[in-house]
Image (cartoon, rainbow, N blue to C red; front, side, top):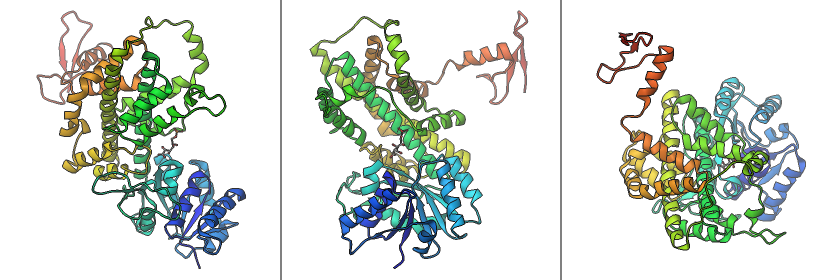
Length: 504
Ligand code: 6PG
């Protein structure tokens, strides 16, 4: 019999998505240039279902891949973002793909590439995309899926995506997690929702990753304060994160941070984190988010700081040298009695800063949606981030509720639940940032979130002076608070009487 869906790429993500589709009853025709990768996924399918009932069929060419599917063909790509996507598309065109066939890109593609591809392949086939979050385990047992593009392509792939997606218990808003091959979660609300026109799904995933960067950095800053100010061991910090994971900070990222910190190195017996080099890598999605926020003028300073934090961490050799040259404050270890207080302050700071990070991310999506004419459904986006993805957290349920209360919300900070939360916890947030600064610990994400909050709630910022400066040296003009909006003025700064000229 013919297969239900074709798949190109059996790398880490591809393999797991294929096995997930197979678990859900779909027959997958798979192709990978790397024969070993293809064999590995077939062997795994055989091991899980028995050789008599295989659901993954290996193909030795693109032509065979097409022949294993009924027309119009539906083919998913799981190949590295960038050039490989176009390479495979061209190979499929050569193999005879038709105008009504669908290719679905699932990589971390730059959203503008997706828009360009949809246009450039028009008439050759339908280029659709689905951004995937959740890493290896998510792909295998339930990722969060952000599809966008041609609505017809969505109707074709929707049942499959909803079947393999992570599921949320509608009563609690929490993920239903079952990591058993052959026994997929079929109940609950699927974390797969159509985002909008071409490119919008990858844009939303890009912002998800920007939030992911900031979320991770915030946790790392709390870790550093506990390690370097309070002198706590990795194991002790792991225990703190475990307790935090029972409260409002409950999230996948806090959970894995606790696990990483609790792990011992198999070679030395030391805490594993103590032997991991403090140089962060990055593949670009956080940077793209920061760039987009700068381009659109929708501030996401905490996301940008998280990208910078990775960049400064990568300057390891320079930092090691600078550490012997540049002075910090006198060593300031706190007493045991203050520990609990400082840890509580860090907890509250993390919570408040996290609210600001999401506020920045959702504001950015709103600005982009207005700019590109997308009708983004923010409650729906928060919903599909409740399970499966890297930033999944109980918190996302509160965001869902905020947008269900008001889908026109200008900024998450203005939602009554979140504004109340910050008003309750902000004192500790301020303390945590101040204490870290006094101790010489960099907390760029925690403090940039605080500055974002303070700037956003300040009716009169010092940009009046800034406009004066701009007008002084460049005649850039300014508006007056006491005159009609849009009317601009310039002062002739060269004359001692500073005469005011109305410009327009
Ligand atoms: C996810 C992740 C995933 C990946 C990114 C981040 O949602 O599943 O975001 O897409 O981990 O590539 O990678 P970097 O940290 O390397 O930029």
